[in-house]
Length: 251
Ligand code: PEP
Image (cartoon, rainbow, N blue to C red):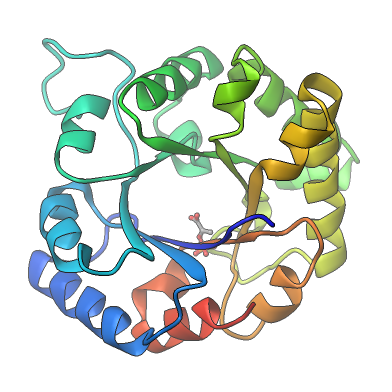
């Protein structure tokens, strides 16, 4: 049985006070639902405080949205994987499409970030997903396979098992256009098959694959019901406590 996971990517939203209030509401609202792993991924400044607030509840963890691809050094303004881990984060988003698009992150850089995350015992949430034109021209399988191959397939099986893959079609992120359950399932099973081809059936059955892209309280249930969808990476809808709590309860 794979874990059920709901991860909240807050992006560049919330002040410290708003972040504290939102996490407190989510903590009290989620009651005894310990079956679902909840990962809150705030702006990195708030990691220490949110790790403190959630430490009594083992079904909650904190993550970071990005790290730099070098271990440490003269890179003003950047954050290292080791610094992120030392503040209490357990997860790290790598390769979000907004970072690939606005910050020109390359596959080589992402590969280094994956290695650093694993070195510092952070679980990578590696984001993949096709652009609208790749979907429309039927190149979406190739696009996603390349993203996985280039950044993950150097890893040994013992490491690939730890990775969470988030399938986030770019045309669905922040657009209110959600992939249908059929589209999500088709891609998730394709990703699992690609892992199987390289690492075998046992590994492919273990790996968690999340769906992201305008997932909300209305559509989460049918997406999470798909055989190869193990939960969601949630952007906009994770900023509102009620909406996020409904998503948590959608399995
Ligand atoms: C995301 O950015 O990871 C995301 C899924 O955003 P949204 O839910 O807002 O589409």
